[in-house]
Length: 120
Image 1 (cartoon, rainbow, N blue to C red):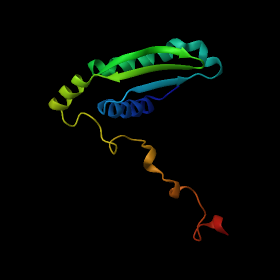
Image 2 (cartoon, rainbow, N blue to C red):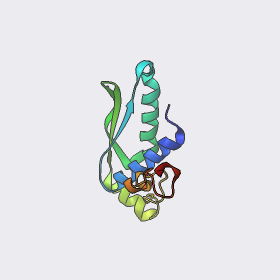
Image 3 (cartoon, helix red, strand yellow):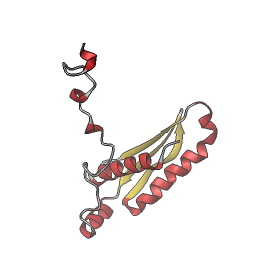
Image 4 (spheres, rainbow, N blue to C red):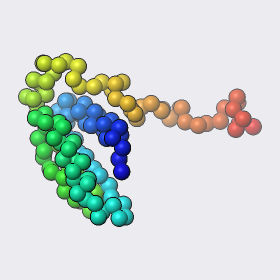
Protein backbone atom coordinates (compact mmCIF):
# COMPACT_ATOMS: atom_id res chain seq x y z
CA UNK A 1 0.00 0.00 0.00
CA UNK A 2 3.04 2.31 -0.04
CA UNK A 3 2.69 5.22 -2.45
CA UNK A 4 5.28 5.67 -5.22
CA UNK A 5 6.34 9.06 -3.86
CA UNK A 6 6.92 7.67 -0.36
CA UNK A 7 8.94 4.82 -1.79
CA UNK A 8 10.96 7.31 -3.87
CA UNK A 9 11.85 9.31 -0.77
CA UNK A 10 13.06 6.16 1.01
CA UNK A 11 15.13 5.17 -2.03
CA UNK A 12 16.77 8.62 -2.15
CA UNK A 13 17.62 8.42 1.54
CA UNK A 14 18.96 4.90 1.04
CA UNK A 15 21.13 6.17 -1.83
CA UNK A 16 22.65 8.76 0.52
CA UNK A 17 23.42 6.10 3.14
CA UNK A 18 24.87 3.73 0.56
CA UNK A 19 27.07 6.48 -0.88
CA UNK A 20 28.57 6.95 2.59
CA UNK A 21 29.44 3.24 2.73
CA UNK A 22 26.61 2.18 5.04
CA UNK A 23 24.37 -0.83 4.56
CA UNK A 24 20.64 -0.30 4.12
CA UNK A 25 17.77 -2.49 5.27
CA UNK A 26 14.36 -2.28 3.62
CA UNK A 27 11.47 -3.58 5.68
CA UNK A 28 7.86 -4.18 4.64
CA UNK A 29 5.46 -4.74 7.53
CA UNK A 30 2.44 -6.96 6.98
CA UNK A 31 -0.79 -6.55 8.90
CA UNK A 32 -3.66 -9.00 8.95
CA UNK A 33 -4.60 -10.29 5.51
CA UNK A 34 -1.73 -8.49 3.82
CA UNK A 35 0.36 -11.59 4.51
CA UNK A 36 -1.52 -13.33 1.70
CA UNK A 37 0.16 -11.03 -0.83
CA UNK A 38 3.84 -11.55 -0.04
CA UNK A 39 4.68 -11.72 -3.75
CA UNK A 40 3.68 -8.05 -4.21
CA UNK A 41 6.10 -6.91 -1.51
CA UNK A 42 8.86 -9.15 -2.87
CA UNK A 43 8.31 -7.69 -6.34
CA UNK A 44 8.55 -4.13 -4.99
CA UNK A 45 11.74 -4.89 -3.07
CA UNK A 46 13.29 -6.61 -6.09
CA UNK A 47 12.37 -3.60 -8.25
CA UNK A 48 14.10 -1.29 -5.78
CA UNK A 49 17.22 -3.46 -5.88
CA UNK A 50 17.28 -3.56 -9.69
CA UNK A 51 16.88 0.24 -9.85
CA UNK A 52 20.13 0.61 -7.89
CA UNK A 53 21.82 -1.54 -10.53
CA UNK A 54 25.54 -2.13 -10.08
CA UNK A 55 25.78 0.33 -7.18
CA UNK A 56 24.72 -2.30 -4.66
CA UNK A 57 25.18 -5.91 -3.71
CA UNK A 58 22.16 -7.72 -2.31
CA UNK A 59 23.38 -9.04 1.01
CA UNK A 60 20.03 -10.55 1.96
CA UNK A 61 17.38 -11.05 -0.68
CA UNK A 62 13.74 -10.33 0.26
CA UNK A 63 12.64 -12.92 2.82
CA UNK A 64 10.03 -13.11 5.54
CA UNK A 65 11.09 -12.53 9.13
CA UNK A 66 8.00 -12.94 11.28
CA UNK A 67 5.46 -10.35 10.07
CA UNK A 68 8.09 -8.42 8.14
CA UNK A 69 9.82 -8.91 4.82
CA UNK A 70 13.44 -7.78 4.93
CA UNK A 71 16.06 -7.00 2.31
CA UNK A 72 19.59 -5.81 3.08
CA UNK A 73 21.69 -3.94 0.52
CA UNK A 74 25.41 -3.20 0.75
CA UNK A 75 27.20 -0.58 -1.36
CA UNK A 76 29.73 -1.35 -4.08
CA UNK A 77 32.40 1.25 -3.30
CA UNK A 78 34.03 1.17 -6.73
CA UNK A 79 30.69 1.70 -8.47
CA UNK A 80 29.87 4.72 -6.26
CA UNK A 81 33.34 6.21 -6.86
CA UNK A 82 32.85 5.83 -10.62
CA UNK A 83 29.35 7.38 -10.45
CA UNK A 84 30.55 10.37 -8.44
CA UNK A 85 33.49 10.88 -10.81
CA UNK A 86 31.12 10.99 -13.80
CA UNK A 87 28.25 12.87 -12.13
CA UNK A 88 29.27 14.76 -8.96
CA UNK A 89 25.64 15.73 -8.18
CA UNK A 90 24.21 12.22 -8.63
CA UNK A 91 23.67 11.73 -4.90
CA UNK A 92 20.85 13.92 -3.49
CA UNK A 93 21.69 16.13 -0.53
CA UNK A 94 19.57 16.17 2.59
CA UNK A 95 17.86 19.36 1.50
CA UNK A 96 16.94 17.83 -1.87
CA UNK A 97 15.15 14.84 -0.37
CA UNK A 98 11.51 15.64 0.33
CA UNK A 99 9.93 14.60 3.60
CA UNK A 100 12.98 14.94 5.81
CA UNK A 101 12.39 14.03 9.43
CA UNK A 102 14.14 17.24 10.49
CA UNK A 103 11.37 19.50 9.16
CA UNK A 104 9.61 19.64 12.52
CA UNK A 105 11.68 20.12 15.62
CA UNK A 106 10.27 19.37 19.05
CA UNK A 107 9.94 23.13 19.60
CA UNK A 108 7.65 23.45 16.57
CA UNK A 109 5.04 21.08 17.96
CA UNK A 110 1.58 22.38 18.80
CA UNK A 111 2.07 24.09 22.13
CA UNK A 112 -0.38 26.79 23.16
CA UNK A 113 1.02 30.31 23.18
CA UNK A 114 -0.38 33.53 24.57
CA UNK A 115 -1.50 34.52 21.05
CA UNK A 116 -3.34 31.30 20.29
CA UNK A 117 -6.96 30.77 21.35
CA UNK A 118 -6.01 27.45 22.97
CA UNK A 119 -4.05 29.26 25.69
CA UNK A 120 -7.21 30.82 27.18
